[in-house]
Image 1: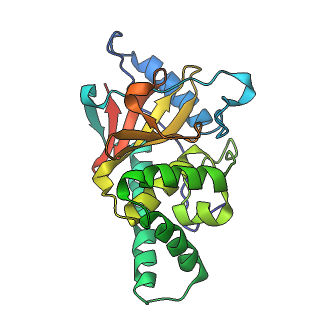
Image 2: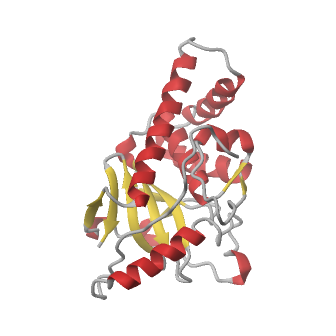
Length: 242
């Protein structure tokens, strides 16, 4: 899957700072950033059974109330999120204009069918439905090692395949189209226990839910433990987690 607004993909991840660990040395940060660039979405499978290559599935722990965030705007990954968000918003605007009768396009009709299915259920259960639909219909397919691309949601839907960040962007777009505010969704950039990069979606519903393509069902943050949240991306920008 490739969309018209691509860009050269270079992933860089900022600080990882644990409560019981001091600040990482720059060399340590860069080492993880390199692994993240090489590994995001490539080491985890959406089958609920575990990670690829036999490594164990590690639950995820998020402690949002305890997060200390530092805005990052000049890094490559921060710029990537800004560009991706702009592309996704442009696509959402086009889809919305089609709904108002400005265009007749089968792709827009396919999108509207999906969003309507989600809108038909109470908002409190929409995250679980979106998680089920996307996990069940979007085949996990990792990008080439030299071309890790964050695809537009519509492209992922029509292709029927994508890696972890493609799953996340599609779930976020469907939820916002169905009525969720952008402020209620956050992209979580994770470092797994094995050192791999991964991405999941955090949603403010009745409780904070994590939609992770490695799991069959949404998780609550209190029920998880393991992976480290290295950064989050929101409607306000990109932030490293301290």
